Structures are given as structure tokens and as C-alpha cells.
Image (tube, rainbow, N blue to C red; front, side):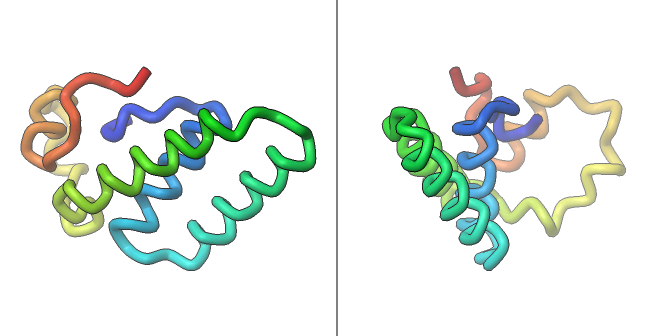
Length: 94
């Protein structure tokens, strides 16, 4: 929700790239590799995935580390406020 990525393939991989940049998760590397491999095997276009990966990694490097933030203490806050505080883009990705 905070990153603005969708629930489609590129959105999920973009989120994994964000996760990789934030916490260096080996699982994120595995999921990114699996998503790319699946896309190649299904002969689907790579461009949307690669753009999402680049955007997610860039966002993850620029944003404050999300795992150190107690989001549950601010459920009533608007998402736009959280995005500003955490250094995330204000508008959802398209």
C-alpha cells in the first residue's frame, strides 16, 4: 500500500526489489529470479518487470527503513502522510 505497487506480476516484483534494497533479503532475490524466469518461459514482455524492478530498488534505497517504523501506531494517519514521512512517492505508481 505504501509503495504504490499493484498486485500484478510487475507490482509484486517491484515490491520485492524494494524489499531487497531495504533489507537485503535472500528470499527477495529468489522471488525476483523466479518471476523473471517465468516471464521468459511464458514469452511475456520483460520491459514492465524490469521497469518495476528498477523503480522498486531505487525507492527502497531512497526511503527510510520501513522495518524500523511502528506503522501499527498510526493506523488513523492518512497514507499520504506516511509516504511523506518515509520518503516514498506521494502518488501511487501507474
